[in-house]
Amino acid sequence: MTQQTYKADAIKVLRGLEGVRKRPAMYIGDVGKRGLHHLVFELVDNGIDEALAGYATQVSVTIHEDGSVTVRDNGRGIPVDTHPELGVSGVEVVMTTLHAGGKFDSKTYQISGGLHGVGASVVCALSKRLVVTVRREGHIYRQEFAQGVKVTELEVIGDTEETGTEIRFWPDPEIFQVLEFDYALLRDRLRELAFLVSDLHIEITDERTGAHEVFHYEGGLVEFVKYLDEGRTPIHDPFYFKTRSDSVEIEIALEYHTGYVETLLSFANTIHTHEGGTHLTGFKTALTRAINDYGKSYNLLKKPVQGEDVREGLTAVIHVKLPSPQFEGQTKTKLGNGYIKGLVDSLFYERFYRFLEDNPSVAQAIVEKAAMAAQGREAARRARELTRRKSFLESDSLPGKLADCIAREADHAELFLVEGESAGGSAKQGRNREFQAILPLKGKILNVEKARLEKALANEEIRTIITAIGAGMGEDCDPSKARYGKIIIMTDADVDGAHIRTLLLTLFYRLMKPLVEQGFLYIAQPPLYRVQKGKKEWYLYSDEELEALKKEIGTDGIRIQRYKGLGEMNPEQLWETTMDPERRILKRVTIEDAAEAERLFSILMGDKVEPRRQFIEENAKNVVNLDV
Ligand code: 0RA
Image 1: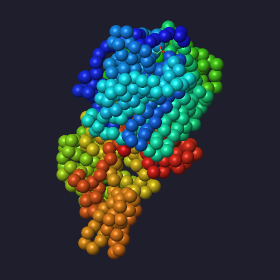
Image 2 (image 1 turned 180 degrees about the vertical axis):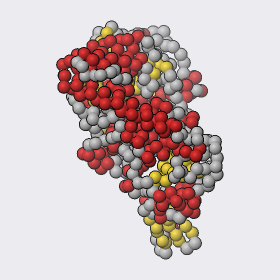
Image 3 (image 1 turned 135 degrees about the vertical axis):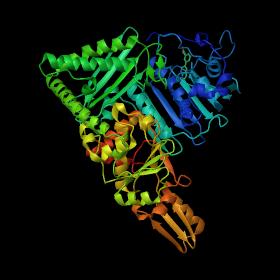
Image 4 (image 1 turned 90 degrees about the horizontal axis):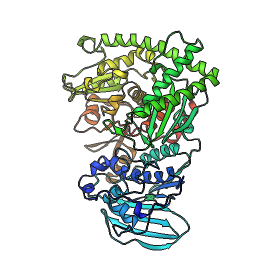
């Protein structure tokens, strides 16, 4: 890395900060939970920039008890000398003007793209208080701001041999609807960043709870792939390559496992491209061609296989770094730079084809797996046509077990998926049949993580669920066709219930993901206790609530009933506590972090027992770490 000396005069000033407080959503997406956490990632990105430029090796995040967060890096430190035109320090320029930064040339990668990279100044504008501490040129400097305006001058507060930038901020309650930081959300993204930038040490500390984790993965993407596949059985050592062509860097790791699920994660300049884009397209095209070419050359394939066939049981991470990334798509997470497709295609093809030639037994296993997948796909297509033919369009083909509701508009209609025939019976009697439909489920449904599509579709219980909902499945899944606006999973509050809930979540996540993404899926919260004292009664949903109530009303003469299952409630009780929209508690299932959700399902539902046991032990409380 060339030793460029940017000083304050290299900082280009583009715009003032007024607009940020007026329209925060334009800069950070929203002013809810997501936007709040975006502030932290904005600062972390600056540290990552310093690391990618070769200057920082550490980034740390600390959540403080007073609701503030500190982000620190050991890079060069924000310049402290006076800007020649503006007459203020570099620190002040960076913190109070939009798009300031010494990195607007494309010699170093800027992380910026889409919502990202708008810089520390946005965080400053949206904080009721912010303190910057810079270690540089032998001194420790400090300056304080409030709502984007400086409240102290830059001053020297000590001496040091270290360098780096430390920013502590207190999010402004006038701006944000949510002020509480979520440790797990920050941690998951920081871990992901540590996989993506392998030389970096990333630390997170939560002073509210004492939690502390350090992430550093020398193996980078190879370790990322292994991490994602922790619950699965790989069939070879990961393939890995990294290459550079002009100013573009391409890095890919992949492995095939014994399962059927496809897990592809793509990134551009460390940003998760949820919607894919040109890098992913190039990768997929090359993979399909390489396997077909190899299979044909070595007489391993009778006829060509398709893209989805070569991705069955594949886990891959693709990371490209390029100057000026273009982000498109609904959520601005689709890489648009057209030339990247051809570049990834040709460079990856060459290296992957060579990998196949160098590892003939692995290559044979991969080609055979793809051929099997092609057969499975044919069988699944036939099965799907069957499901489609007896689809919801012919209303008498709705599953016999379904007690449908009267309402026809999805907006008003709800479907309860209920564990067990007896609870199903209570739910049918207790429901409001105007808008509530009930589908009782017999015990445990098939685990779709371990079964191929054709087997999943051959399963009566799964077909029933898909047909009842009517939105289709797989690539055909279309939430606008769903017959219900809310699909509510209602299981017992015990271990079996949690297992069935996870099986159902896996089914939706794997076969009807758009329904999850678009917020159709909910989890009902049946009460854990019923408490009676005299003529009064209470339904309680947690042990904490029970303790609180005992404190309030005392323990004399109270009767506590613990519900072990939905079946112990009569229809009226079930309605009052769990189904009545006026009184029930529903948790909406969202996918906060796709990579973590992928891994979670592979651990919970994959074929390895040990990681699952360990995971459940560590996370005994929140059985599924989807943000429900
Ligand atoms: C402008 C110029 C230089 C560094 C930075 C900004 C910088 C900003 C942040 C924000 C968080 N951490 C940061 N680290 C560095 C270059 C300074 C030089 O040439 O020494």
